[in-house]
Length: 617
Image 1: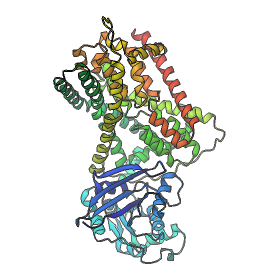
Image 2: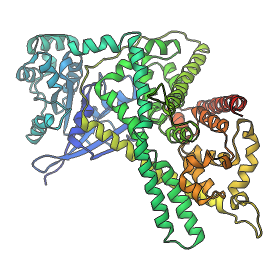
Image 3: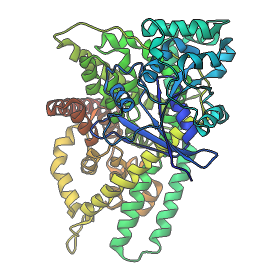
């Protein structure tokens, strides 16, 4: 096999660069960070027909090499060969949206002017033909002095021209000095376009029609709310049969493995600690996959930038901008990439405010907790004959986080000394049919991330919690459950009075401690605690949801609702706090975030518990 080829993908946001990356590399991808910076580094591999391996580096999207954000600075420095630890690239593949050359060619000219080997990739050529646009590819190549290939990256066959060009190594240094084109960059682009592009119909009728709906000040907001509502309904209704199957599989696994272990302590460790702990979290994988399916679908179709534009006025009133929408939406997956995504916000005040409210978005780690408590205390029935009541409650929890974020941002705005604001400028790409392969790869990545958390931190904490719940062993002639004499039992009894006003029993108090490492650990922790608390084998076998909702558990509907509200606000994620410290460089911001979030959590849980007690007893 010949020596590997190293190429980097460069392009504007929304040019289809990620789709090209996914079509080329499939699942052979690795994600990490560049040395010394927090910007994500995504690398993939594939083999050419000749057998030569190609290493593909997917660079952050940028409109120019004149960087205004950390993401853009990384792209610039890789192009200049200034990133420590990053190999020199054999070629730069400039990915451009062929339907919008006037915006995308400027970056291509900048990369070519660096004197690097370049191959220009005209993506979305199916849209070009559909809209009647004619591009003289040969003449464009002559103007730029480098090879130009056509792709349709939303399907596998659409990148065959690119693979062939890489096989033939058609990337090259510019055959002439690009600066010979007179005028500024904009003038150069216009001169090229005037000679190589013919617009039969300059308007995209499909995009124009859809935007009249999705960007309408009233219809657009109604559509967005409806889309979010459908997502949360689907999270419960679609996932139910898969969750039942997973729950049954772990029940069988616990019985099967437990039957081969005779030593009581080892049996308890494996069945109650490891299998029960991991199983109580893995069961929520279908819900997480469904949630991310919708997020990726909206991203692939080009809807998300429009949602940001639509919400700009609302967010402006709250002291944010439409640019905060993408980081906040990312925080629905996890607050960590959401906080890191704020690097694209140029206004430092908006960026800091977005960081402070990002943890209020309902991340996927909260979903297992919500699903457990909703299934335990909210009846599984329909409203109006077709709406899931449980889905409605989940939707309300998500909306509570969003509204709370806007309120907190508004309060922060009141204390700003500088009241000036910046207008939102962003590109709205054409609507596209989603790439099935890109969505599949995205879902696979999210599933791996979730399961790694189960296999890593949750696995370790489940074992640690089992130890704390098991030792020391109860004395002879003990009359209470063994866990009451353990380290965890004693600690829970000590701190329980602090949480009594919000309805938390000592089992919940124990589970909240390891949950600081990761929110979803609380589910595994409750499973371990109740498995060791004297609950009957039948109750444990029926599942944690049935156990905590039983009359003998000590839980009430007021307790369940209070814990639900607690998790809207409580900052149960040390990794998020560490990311805030890294992104802001300030422990003061970490302390402020921790105090205000725990304060909100306790106040909201207290009010919920007291009101629920009044109405439900």
